[in-house]
Image (cartoon, rainbow, N blue to C red; front, side, top):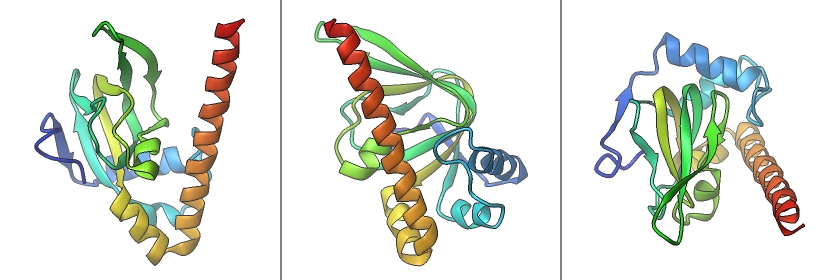
Length: 170
């Protein structure tokens, strides 16, 4: 669950037909590494997730804060910004629907490495570390697939970062 005090700008919403439709789309069509779940898996996974709406400018993650959850952007978008050593914020990427963020924090428990802010009204599916562990215990096949997907996503992002570093050094 999202820390309600720290992230009071986010609104918990019901997992209604709109949420389930968008979650089904994002988890079944392969728009992200979390794609390719079958239709029977989606409601099971949804039982372990929470739904939140973020209005424009709302912080979803804050750099340096511990959270222990990941988000799948179902609708809308986020800007990811990083503080420079001079104290300025620098935008490092856009997050579009179907993209997952926060996966490092859910695995290693470390504070977020950047801040994510809603660039427009957004709908988020949130999976906490506690619920991920429950998923692994209660639905081992789905839990293993989720962990494998997170590992694949982290690997892809590390490879991309390595390529960017090599380009920068050259």
